[in-house]
View 1 (spheres, rainbow, N blue to C red):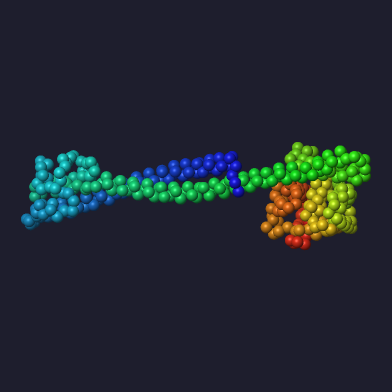
View 2: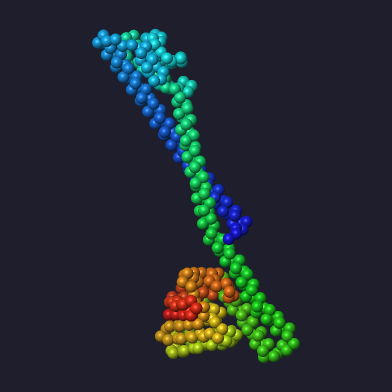
Length: 383
């Protein structure tokens, strides 16, 4: 199904909103994660450096107090990294560090390195300060940044794909309604064209007053009138004042059949009415007319040539049974939706059963459907 310009714009707006909000959310998450990880990294690095300095400090104090030999040069040589021992004047005794040390700080960063100054030796063996330098701190932080950005990009690409399909799902109901409306306009043009054309031909016919010509005019005018009534009932149902009164449904049904039987004759369909008892019901007359008109009209429209329609009134029940094409199982739930048409081979608006459903709901009329594809359909109304 193609997308109109307006639908593409709506799809793009939804997608941009989704992606922008997702980007802001994940950017905040990435920033907080980076802050947490960098803080954890610094803390871990500081603890390791402090532990190494404490171990060396303990060994220096022990060696000095026990008189054991302790080689500072050997420690500097074997230490995996840079380390230095300084006296009370901050002069290097032995060191592999080439930086100027700020002895007023316990821990600080110098360029791309972290510097730890430990003074727990208290001057034993002449060592006042142990200084440890951790190289490559900035490099580790850059690596962490690149990792976070990479995963953020991967997640964002994934969200873009998901967002596109979500946007498609979001626009699908709108698209379906637009297609239904387009079909309604096409179908209404077709439905109105037939009776209007017949009217024009009849009016311009040489024998205007012939019985056949007058009958054609009557049927065409009635068809236009019924289409107008259906549209008016749906579009103006709230603004129209309803007159609810106790009506004899049998009488109204017979009145409608006088017109509908003419439509049935065109397809050589016989209509059989079994009027077993009178049914009285409080309802607006036009609402009931629209109800039975659409049900019987559908029974004619979707029936077979030389088919039959059996209408039975008994015990507050109205049965309308036809020998038509039937309704597929997948269409049973959707047939009452406005503009829905399960069969495009037969003309119509897709409004008839929507009107039927509205009337039944408004007046608490029970409606049941029994159908079999290829054999026919029965609607049962309980008043």
